[in-house]
Image (cartoon, rainbow, N blue to C red; front, top):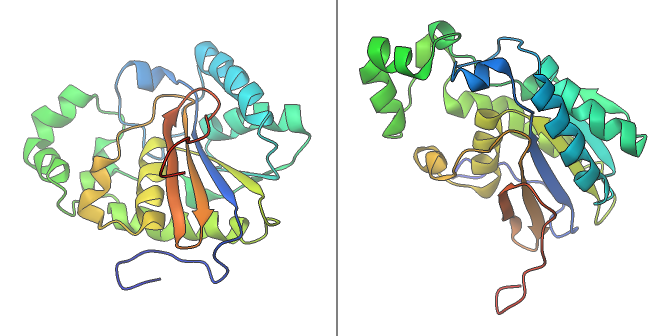
Amino acid sequence: MSATGEVTSGRPGRGRRLILWRHGQTSWNVERRFQGTTDVELTETGVAQARRAAKLLASLGPDTIVASDLQRAARTAAELAALTGLPVTHDEGLRETYAGVWQGLTHDEIIERHGDEYAAWKRGEPVRRGGGELETEVADRAAPVVLAHADKLPDGGTLVVVSHGGTIRTTIGRLLGLESRHWESLGGLSNCCWSVLGEGGRGWRLLEHNAGTLPEPVLGDDD
């Protein structure tokens, strides 16, 4: 880990690619309830989203799939596994942020009952939402899982990580070396959308964020 908190690999510049894919829709997403580590299953719409996205991601030729063990992520990953024939490794380190008493509450209920705590979190202050995990603690457990699987890829290989919106955001922030108070500047992921990190000579770069279609090449002076 660097002085800025960035998790770095000892073998940079191998041209690897990370696709961080959020799970499909759940009933709690529709109700705007904070899920956290609560194990909520996909809706029929969520399964359809996963199947559509899996067809696109399969065309990118992934080498490895790793997923949270919560069923909404595991079910999403299974759609890609069915198309590619790849096994899925499940790791609890990729679970969503544990948020204590916030879990199961709607967005409005959280603001009503825990408004000061919510406002502090949105300001980028280190907050144990509902008495749960800090965002930096989520990154501490999730980013090493991602890098451990990335280190096993061949040069130019692609890893698909199926996880949760908050966990993906903190992991991206950590891999890019951003200070934790700036992680909120990474917008949220829609259900079954993904972000793409590519590896260059100076480490990981964010190439796509909240994508729902196949990435297009960057044509211009910054390619």
